Image (cartoon, rainbow, N blue to C red; front, side, top):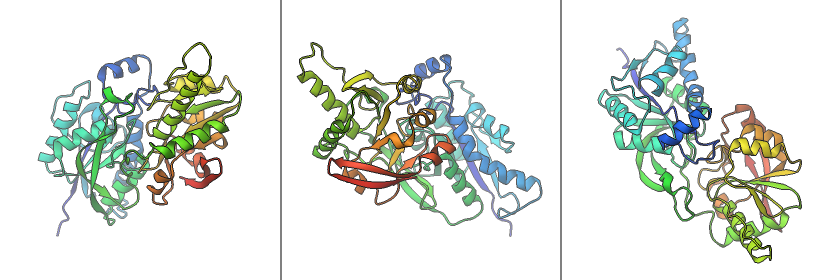
Length: 399
């Protein structure tokens, strides 16, 4: 009896994540995207999608060469969005595909994503693979709901949703495993997002927009961000301890997050109490700020500014927290702290702050990194000290 071919849908948001290194915290505003492209910012999503789909290219090449392997005869077909939304990448990888008949919009808008997803649903895809961020996940959720099983390739800036693999390579491993008939399950996963107009607000948390049915191998999907684990008395105690540990003339690159925001907030309050004659500049909630001797010397810094900074000072530390719930330390919402910045500073100069509640929420699982550079991710693996207060700390695994 002939085995039914599996049909895969493929949609790529080519602009997802483009705002990360620029410090824009999101990539849903097309006017901002146009400005970034004019400034020469690199589109990172196609490379991340390629890291995943290369696994399928390897399967396809083996079949063409006559090596049936664990897949047997070619048992799948791919239906792709047109142009830069998927087709161009698959052609580059020499993966045969059919193309959705929908307008080729140069903007690759949310409406294009939703239309392509709806057509793929109507044409009966068994698995819809999409590459993007939280905004893309919202579009897919609106278009297909839980009627189609999906798998997300992470490429956005914030990445609070739970429908994505931990990194693009693992998404490829899962996809290849599914095609090879390995045991998989299907889980209802949250789609979370924050409106870009609210990203600079202290009191705005991600909102639940719906659920997607997601392919799962039980180990390689990221969890959703848990809410409000970086606020309250615990975070304030940790922030005070972090400030007391700061050394004179050292530069501190401080990442986004509720716990790190407390550090920035307290530094500002301390400075305002001094008779300095001027008010200190407030740090950002979801941006990266640079502090020296209690003063913010770079506010909401982008990657280029951080690179200039680490080449201008000799004593530098990176101070970050992980995302509550999914445990991402670098590569989610802090892409400004790039692989080259990390290597220049050195991983031994990375300090992690987190509340005990946040660590408990990880269930003993390691923290994750997804910098877009496999060598940097490997370099960052290891054990790090997490200080809760001056006399209380823990050693925790990253990677």
